[in-house]
Amino acid sequence: MNAAQFPRIESLRFEGVSFKHENHDPTLQNCDFEFPTGRVVWFKSPEGAGKSTLLQIMAGLLLPDRGAFYMNDKNVIDMSFEEFLPYRLQIGFTFDYGGLINNRSIEDNLLLPLLYHKIVPEGDAHARVRSLVERFEIKKFANERPAHVPGRVRKLAVLLRGLVTHPQVLLLDDPSVGLGEGTQNAFVDVLNEMRAQGHLKHIFISSYDERFMSLMSHDIVHLDGGLLYHQPGEEAAPRAVGQ
Image (cartoon, rainbow, N blue to C red; front, top):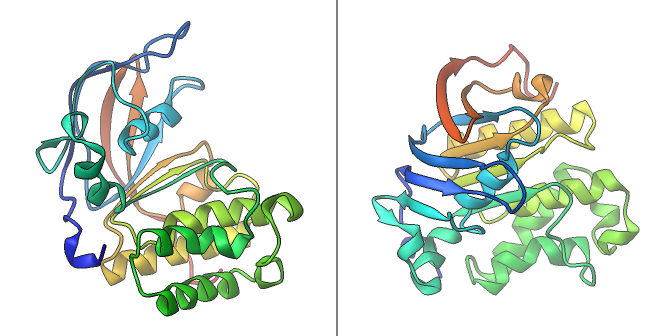
């Protein structure tokens, strides 16, 4: 599937969405919400309120119990797997340390989404992965399996796999956990570059890390009592690229 076949994701909207894990308070309760787009959005909530669940619903990994989730005025819940796939391939997501295939090398894990879905030619896929591996100085771990590399490298691989397809939408769950400040800064630099190039349009982040979030201008969306509330406009702290 080439880039020309991907839809442009312009809007994301909940209508009457409810979701509840068994034996837990509702994460969402009859929630109507138009997500801010073209921005970095920081999801904030009391601990255990369900920010990770919210991201999984936005990724199409969980379906609401009730209501509708619209992308470009198309209800994701009514789509077949084949209908949703072009949208799915434009959503990058990372959840803590999960998602890597244990019996594949770090490099293979990064290549897999590009090659399996034939997003770019094989040579371009290898060049793209090589560029990221070298930029984040993890080349010496590229041929190792996830279980055999340090935790920070495993976390980086999870983050980079979310970026490698050049998605329009990026969903990040606690992206700074396990990374030093220098690596966090470098990761934000890549996000900013991808946004400037036009690949990456909408970023949604669940995090308790105020220092990390201060690196980016962002809106805030609060999840509280099963509803979402938008608080626009916090600017990034001044910082030179690479610092």
